[in-house]
Structure formats: structure tokens, C-alpha cells
Image (cartoon, rainbow, N blue to C red; front, top):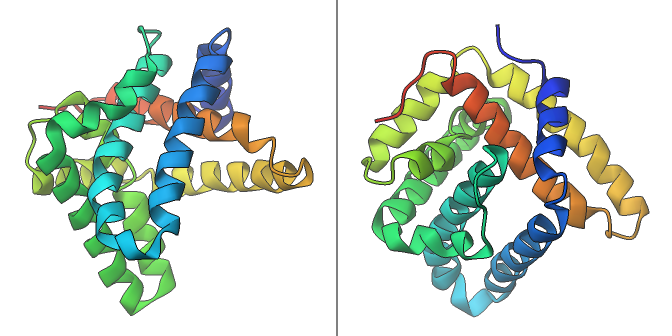
Amino acid sequence: MATENTALMQAARAALKDKWGLAIGTFLVYSLIMGSFGAMQKVGLAAILVAGPMMLGAATFSLSLSRGKDAKLEQLFDGFRYFTGALLTYLLSLLYVLLWLLLLIVPGIIAALSYAMVFYILADDPNLKPQDVLARSKELMDGYKLKLFYLFLRFLLLAILCVLTLGIGFLWLIPYIHVTLAKFYDDLKNKGYQPG
């Protein structure tokens, strides 16, 4: 039986205790970089090239925080050391989700949930082939997609509250989401799944 979402959220808050400043600063940098590339229409290709490595870096940083290791802002850029794998994993997962979305919205959501752990898996084993990363994420999420969906619904409610703070609350919410997802990944991994 997987750990309850509320317990994972509580564990994430405990991991962030005394680390909120570092987490907020790191994810502010992450959001600014991702937002800047996303907003500039003429560099659509650059946005695609940056997304995978940055998402891998965010997963690496989140796992470090979640596991009580020495998390550093520089980890945000660790994904560029595995640029090709991170890029191909991002493109492949995006392609699969988009193909399922073409059928219907629900299959697209299911596909997105199936591949939600790809960058955490890649952070644990950056030398995995992209298709293996996706296959492992699918295997890991088998039977837990609805649980993750409910977790996202909780965060959606918190996001609505953040809007009421004129967006300031997102400074805390974004790292909270990432570290909770890292806890979610580790919880499933510790129940029998082994990367590598």
C-alpha cells in the first residue's frame, strides 16, 4: 500500500523546513528561465532544447531536497551534462502525450500521468535510454495514476489560493509541488521498483 498523499505532502514540508529560501530561489530561477524561453515566440526551438535538461535539473534538485542531501542551486543545470538523453526523453514523452491527446482528452491525461516520473527516474540513472525511461515510468505508475491525479487536484486547489495572493503564493507552491513529487517517486520506488 502506497503512502497517503497527505503524508507525502507533510514529508515534503518537513524536507523543506529551513530550506525554503534555497528552494524558492532555485525554482524562481527555474521559472524565469523556462518562462523566458516559453514567452519568446522566435526561439521556439531554443525553448524545446532547454526544457528537457532544465526539467532533469529540477528533478535532481528536488530529489536532493527530498532525500535530505546537500541540495544546491547549481543542480538546476546538471541536466545539461546529459543534454541528449534529457532532450530525447522530453521529446518522446511529449510526443506520446500529444498523440494520446489527439484521440481524446482523458487518454492524454492518462498518458501524462504515466510519464510523470520520467525525470526523477532519469535523475537517478541519467545513462538510461529515453525509451527505457518512459517504459519504467509507465511501469512505476501502473496502479498509481489515480493517486497522482488526486495529488494534482490538491495542488490545483492550492494554486487557486495562490491566485488570491496575487501570485505570491506560487513562490512557495512550486517548490512544494516538486518536492512532493520527489517524495511520491521515492515512495513508489521503495515499494519494489529499482532503477538501473
